[in-house]
Image (cartoon, rainbow, N blue to C red; front, top):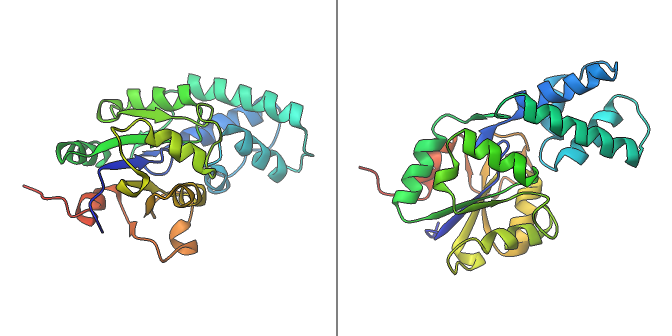
Length: 222
């Protein structure tokens, strides 16, 4: 694999394990509305397309009819609860060290996530990842969000004159793959995440943990 100049990371399921915190917030909302809790294994499958899609999936699996007004109100309340509940996720082991190594090797790093911008930057800052990044483009900070390539192209603007062919996307979701490939950016699949992309796209290079990334990129280690 040719060495890239810049890396674009997905957030939930790639840099951070946010599923437990998302599950707690969603089920707290569901309890407030006197609905039965949703299993964590199901919630993992909802993650990746932003809070509105998460609520839509949760309502569907709870037997509720589609209702755009109710879905938006519940998504807003979910975000309020999620923000109250702490950082909103935990770092995958080794993520800080990997980011430090990548930056030391001269790569620029950014995050492209369907999570809202404020929630994403709050999480990155609280977990100590923000100092390694040139920036983050949340789902509400781009013209269109993943799987649309416009989201990835917007993130590329954060870098110093990096062409799509000189960047690499690391993500766990099909939306990451679709957006990156349509933007002309190569992809590495985070197979440890939530999206199941390694099964759907076995042709793509993958990592079993984030600590595998420097070796796959053939970065020199001390």
